[in-house]
Picture 1 (spheres, rainbow, N blue to C red):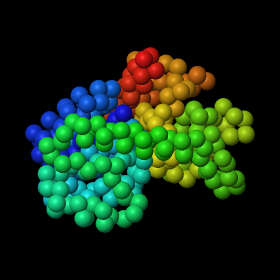
Picture 2: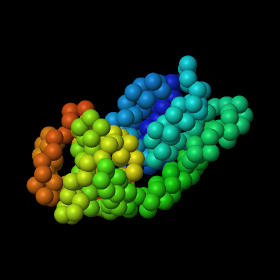
Picture 3: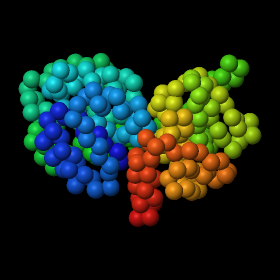
Picture 4: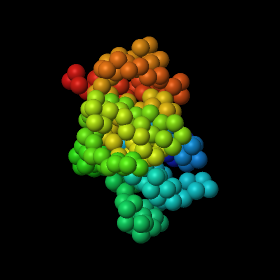
Length: 245
């Protein structure tokens, strides 16, 4: 799993990031010390992230407002609130818009047993979400298509023109109006962005050539962007590590 911790208390953020890594050893944990940095980096990370552990009492920002913004833009990312002041914020949390519901609510210092429960809730949410993503409906100017997501090999984007590639003759290339980050919200977690213009289905990856390009099973070769290589490498390594167990 891929987790983000965001807390402007550096000591707590780093400590909690370590606690999270130890509690879920196969996870990837990325720590941000400001909401501004998180929001700046999230468009590139959104295709990877399962959940964000977010402090509520952030300097110059309200963590609940940040969470509402994130969930409206990236509805597949779960939010877990963390705070040292539960009495001050519990009412505000549960008076958010109905489509913004936290996966869990943790009080500092975070007890490991409660952290484990939060992780299990995130996994349950993800399982339900993944089941809903076996098919997607896309519309072009001429047609409407129902596509099995496990038949999509990769996706490319140029401006707002996004192209979906499949091995099926009738849907070999379908171009729609969308951004990559918006479209990836409809896809399961085995779709990973490897470049600002490309996303690949890891089930169709044959080789990662020195982590500079990806070769798919149909011999398509796709560049790995420098700003994506570290996260892409972690995701691929984690996936194949899980498959071997």
